[in-house]
Structures are given as structure tokens and as C-alpha cells.
Image (cartoon, rainbow, N blue to C red; front, side, top):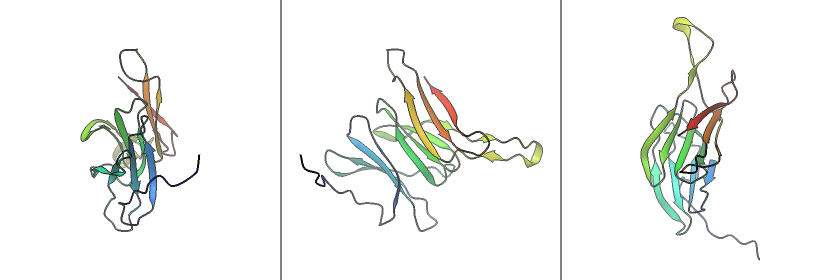
Length: 154
């Protein structure tokens, strides 16, 4: 076999891609880029079978700049982490957010309490969703105080 370029996906207005994830079945790829403007960059969902843009997610303002994207092991969900929080949406119903992995409070108490960001990466793991009783988790970090946070998914 040869190592030739199979296709090119263009759509982030020349901005560098800072995160990418391919779905388990290989049908979709999610990308996000760093924008040179103050406007946050969207997440692009590409159909690799057709080599074209199939959807665009505009993250809510409470997410912040996107730092990581990841499909779950079964390809049913996409998690995207920002500097403020992490969201989980449904594949093919991209605007339907089914989970918010919120930032948590740091050790500071009282009126000076600050929320710790969930920036860094986001990753899925476990045995898969479905009737087999598999356990799935998603992790996001680092915030400097507790490096990785895990959430179970039912």
C-alpha cells in the first residue's frame, strides 16, 4: 500500500487545528482551532466518507476556548472541553447537550472562592454503553489542584 493523502478537509479559515478526534467507526472527525480573533472558534464535524463538513457546533459561552474533543468508545457521544467547563453532546444531534462536567471550587472559602477550570484534555474510557452492563467514564483535567476529574456515565 502507498502512503498517499486520502483527502483534505478545509474549514477553519487558515487557523491552526488545536484538537482533533476520530469516531470509533471512522465516520466522523471533530476538530477545533485556535482563532486569532476574540471570537471563539466552533467545533467542526466532518463526514470522512464524503470528505465534507457535516455539522458545526458553536460551544456555549460557559465553555470557553476549546482545548480538547473526544468521541466516546461507542461513538454515541462527543465531549468537548473548554477552559471553563466540559460538555457532552449526542452524535448526529450535535446541539443536544446531555451532560455538563462543571468546574469545581478550589480550596479557597468564602467570598474569595474561585472555580477551578477543567482545561486540558478530555478522554473516554471503559467497556462501552449498552445492555452488557459496561461502565463508561469521562475524564477532564488539569486544574492545578486535582489533576484529573472522573465522571461516571450511566
